Image 1 (cartoon, protein in one colour):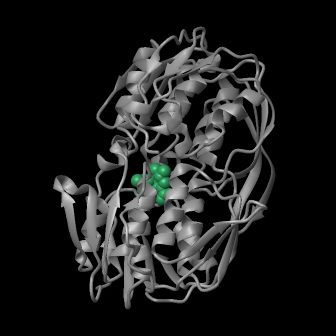
Image 2: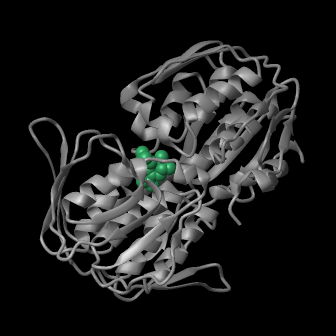
Length: 446
Ligand code: S3P
């Protein structure tokens, strides 16, 4: 069921003793979406272990079924996807509901745009307010027709181009979703698609394209931009995919341990792809007692166990260039910054305004509710922290899972409980969050 004002479930966290133990957070959201999508395009049966079974990813699974792929989970917990082949998706007979997921909607628009049929995309109130022009514009250049609400918002219908024309596209904002939409469209049409990425963003689509057997050209041009070239209609071969633990979910227990005295946690099997590790770099600069153990490779990705202990943190400046590698982590970094001595300045945050909520203003409002001094700029945030926070506020989550989890983390170390107006939104990306944190010593109350 979609979350809206009618089924909100308030949730509070309370000051806790040290968080202790070993844990594994659920599978990476980006890799989970892509494993289903690439499985649906490949010939043969792809088997996925460790898939994130959150609402966002399950909506992508349903969409792949609607396009003709066979998707099921076996009794060992493995997901099986039998694909239909590139350029060979079937026309969905019903609307495609992506719930809260920008990644699912935007990547699948790329698939739909390259097929000569119509498909209709819907989502929850949060997704229906998010800009889709960033993916619709390159699709229009390929010949796709779009019928959308004003300002290119969901619900919308895409009529695939016939024939579609491959394009050369320079991504105007730092967005892996836009890059992936254009590459997925290009993969499903004849001809060569060229994508220029001025700022490097997460590279899971590129890794998975190659992992499924496609050739993808990659070079750095004179301006230092990454140029990807992809020949369309290459055949993909089904793979076994192991999804590592999501670093963006690991961020919550990691920050909880850093700010809660007496904590000592080992977070296992975390994805350490360098397009995703900006938060770890920042926390170490802040003085975090954090080490990476047992670093190894799994399925073409670097993974490791993160050992983290309560630490006296200090404020730092987080440069704008680091934003793409930690774009989903600023809400929880703001909570770490609240407990750090001195000022933390985070720059280059313009993309936070178009996430599941306007995350910059949602974080600022949450800090205000909990008496943490801060300055909110158009694209920056300064948090003036201190090791002893009062808490006591109620935070409006605006259907944003990361706002909910971030402020619940704050309450574990504050003097007074912190309440979020809706804990159910957490299922978007991290089902079992409260149980897992409770098992480590975190205190919550419904
Ligand atoms: C994602 C890309 C990022 C990120 C999102 C997942 C992806 O979005 O915020 O959670 O899987 O490609 P943008 O492309 O909007 O930066």
